[in-house]
Image (cartoon, rainbow, N blue to C red; front, side, top):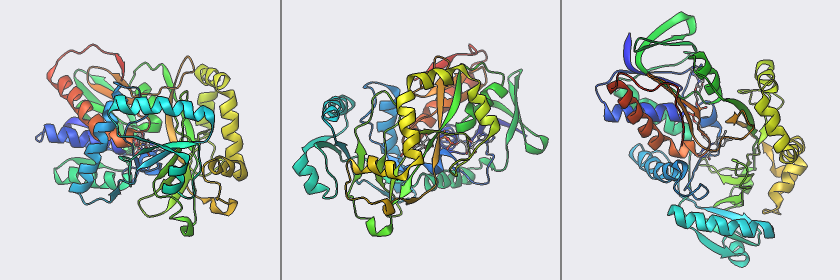
Length: 411
Ligand SMILES: Cc1cc2nc3c(=O)[nH]c(=O)nc-3n(C[C@H](O)[C@H](O)[C@H](O)COP(=O)(O)OP(=O)(O)OC[C@H]3O[C@@H](n4cnc5c(N)ncnc54)[C@H](O)[C@@H]3O)c2cc1C
């Protein structure tokens, strides 16, 4: 069967793209191919569940704009589908004098990005969050929480109602673009024809781009985000989400205390090099995944630049005591027994050949294809407007006969 659009990947970005394309083109035929048996089982189902408000990102950047818009659309979608979400706010806590300086920069960013943020002193922080200590904090009232797996399930349900074909257990092993048609091969040699293809394959995005014959100048390197869950007796230890002031040179936000939509509280995630792209248990190892980055020049350049922070993350990962010490910087009452096992998440981090970490979205395009090669946090928050943006680009491809192939557009 031939479709107008095929989407590979049933994570939140792939599903949001399908939803937005179907909104704009209700009569178009569409198939979503997902290798797992359920939507959202990789990054989308292993994240912190935060609906970010967009305070961190460079003013005017695509990331800042999509995050703000995404938060509004996510909340509206949840309301329309009765999905639980809570606007509990976020406290970004300064624990050192260096943090106080960085806090000023964040406050300026908040103003430039149009994000409501309030600066509070140590006494006020203590009053609002009796278990948290710091030299001061920024309170961001607009930050919320949700279970993104539930969002994915609701989108998948809606798509099925609209006649979109969602095929699970369909691992893509071949992509060929020829004569205005893309042929996609999945497990058991099934073939799917489409006028256009969007690939939202997260941790496998570089492999699928290469499989499609596109030239890549990056590689996905897995970064584990390890969490602990606090015991139920600690569920009211925080009122809002508690974040450290982030290191501006890293795309990760630091270990935070997060209220989950099920009422629990998690600590995490850290950011430690993973030896397996989809191996969630600790010490998971894949020979293919590890050898691929070990033979990539960009990886060694990355290591040489971030040796100190990489080593610190590794030590925090190997020692629960050290992990606890990170949390105690702002929540001194936590004890070792409070850190109970919780499944990790794994970030698909695009690393460029010069060893730099790609902080923004990265798309790779050809006449008939669009590959989402890097969709870092807050892409779960931003998924709906990202989907709308991709849907618009695809509509352009379907209308135009020739398109300059091989352009890389980073937002
Ligand atoms: C630890 C962690 C915490 C985070 N916290 C937040 C947060 O609080 N808020 C936020 O907004 N963002 C957060 N993020 C970021 C966010 O979760 C991701 O940016 C987002 O989920 C990316 O969605 P995706 O659809 O691109 O990727 P994924 O969810 O990884 O989906 C990709 C899909 O492609 C499928 N696939 C791959 N290869 C194939 C193939 N060959 N054939 C068929 N299917 C294939 C996979 O099975 C998968 O379902 C976090 C991420 C992590 C890892």
